[in-house]
Length: 536
Image (cartoon, rainbow, N blue to C red):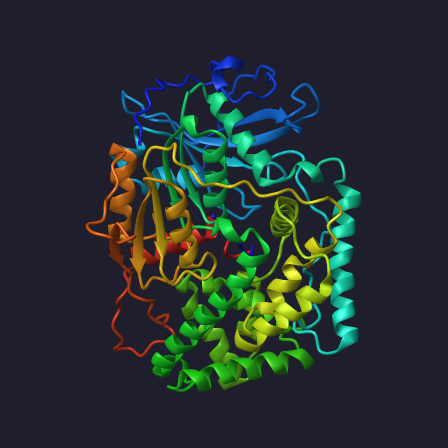
């Protein structure tokens, strides 16, 4: 899903390095008795931004049904509570799958109202296979090195070459990580979360998940409903489409969002000089894409890299001004340098991106069945491409290793749930990465949940990003456990207006242009979306 995301708990104060592990009988799951967990030895790992940040590691079984077998290590971070009375741990997850969550603890603690954050131990973690957890997956370093073949296959030879590249990635994963690959999946990660809960010494855990983190949270809640305190889910994966159908839905939504961006560029013709007709601006973008097939910008940015560069704009409109400037410079000034710089900023894959993609494929290919007949992929993606060409084939090749995955798929759990305290769901109506229908679907599946909508919003990840209305709902919920409730038959329990769109960068904007979006809003959004991994 990414390119590069109540009940009062009287847990008491956690003392660094000393936790009480609940006895096996307390879990109530009927699973094999787990081995005793070691204490979490929290040590200072302060950064300039987060001087109170602490770090720890936790060993968990690679195979949860074999608790005495091989261990792997999870890397955790914490901002400890400061209030006299704690509401317990608030576990945060940025999505992915494959997103590193260690940086989320400091950001969430700093972004919540001080009196709310003070009552929680905010916990971030790198899921199994990710980042500082061990082992960390990296199936095929350099898989996204430029210049890749055009993502849109033009002829049999081009399609065969792209298929061989996808097969090579799947084969490399199977060869390099054959011992752990069967255990990199959402259910295993959800069971890790419960071991984190036990190591923290609390009967229930609170949770804030973005993007894929909403699905991870829903799976955890299905497995351990009695262990859920307050759960907020922001930008919701459709549980009914895991994962092939969800990716098809993304293709249509990202194309619509790309058209929104083209309309914004046309609206700001005074800054970018690409015309006032959105259709003409879009046509210019596709001409640029075609030219890059024969002459990649800076020897690095071909059509696939161009799509990688502009795809983050579908996640977050705060990137639009710089993307538009690069687009304008290429078209109007015949200057490819800003486009190359934009790719280096928004699209280039580094070692962290290689790791994230390796875990992304490992989880999505293992979680659920994908078509094994490539003819199904071919027909579906050409059908979608005809209506939504922006990123359809790019997304197809991103997921194509799943057609050749060396580990058999699991069956996704049914996350329908009627055993939870109120769950808060937050969603933008024009979100491309997790379309609005997913939030409606989960809202219907989780009895007693509350749906808060950002009407007209197109960003993916909407809380703690500058929208005061949404943040107020989240803060009230985390502080009190209460959620808004709709009047009448509406499925939507509360509506917040979307933030104003971005303005052109000062260098591109006319001197008398107004500044509609405040700098604090944009700063918060940019920081959050960097943590959610929308720039890879």
